[in-house]
Image (cartoon, rainbow, N blue to C red; front, side, top):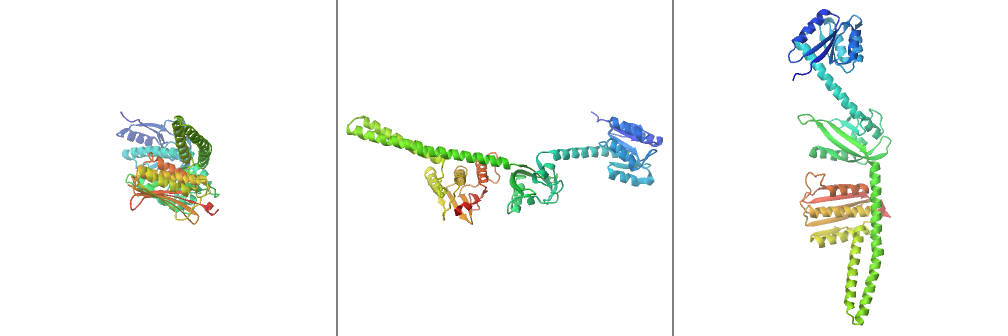
Length: 464
């Protein structure tokens, strides 16, 4: 199936030049050109207005219009149609100026031959298509609701769309030339950049949450995805990032988690203080009944004894449920006690070594924070046993310079080099819990084997 013919509009007042160009296009091999001619600019503009022209051959020396004014008129009439201008030998400068003004190419009369003419027309059409596609892409990026930023291989910003400028509170072009790290909040934004670049080097991309600041100094949390754009040889040409503000979502999620935690704590306390007390009373009465029946040497005394036994078992079960719903006591030292008990239970259940180390007392007055830390330790230990096949686990809790750090270290097989984000639900949960309490989170392979999980946060309440 042959390609569609290229429709050429020639605006030329010289019949000899018109005839010569027509003959050259008729001789062209591999492509069919459909030529239409106009002797005057007005006629040519009228034809352009009707559409259907792929490329224009425009003489800059028409009787009623000369030089760049001729090109400007044709370009304004059909801005999406490529134009190749024709100049005379002694006015080649006009052709150069026309190209600078937006013409695709210029040809000098008397030096044009078939191969040069057809190649120029082909290139003009293809360049226009490429430029149009690029322009459409830029328009799409510009109107996108997602904040988009393009950086150079060296890291400086070279383009931001409107959504990006609005997200950070800058005017158009103000961010160009800056480093993205200048937009990060926190004491060490360069460390964030280093971590991102390391992930891109290992995985080919990075995605996650970034703590940012706007031009006016207000801070917010965004979810970002960053990927390198490479040429066919693998050389990085640019870095492309997208971001959207998730501050409100994080705030709502935090409220939901707090409400859930409070409700769990309430149910746990009701189990302990309400149901537990009722069961204790029933157990006591059952014991009294057993003694009375036994005193009368009645056989039902054994039944009363069995009832008391079952009630006591129910008491233990309710206490276990209450502890699961509210694992950390409301007192400031509740986390230390809960982690110590947790380590002892792990040893009994899984027959491994699990120790809790806390050299100095660490007090956490916010039960919400303490509960999240307990759950993080619980998840880390669970991963160490189930996935890491660990035989020794050490849970550590310390406080230095008002910064509390929870660590879970094991001697298992270690975490994989590349994590499957679809299977790392436990890791995602730990990440979420650390974000909820405003903590930093790190998980890495230990040089000596195994995995180290670290969660650290500013604990000013420890001074209460």
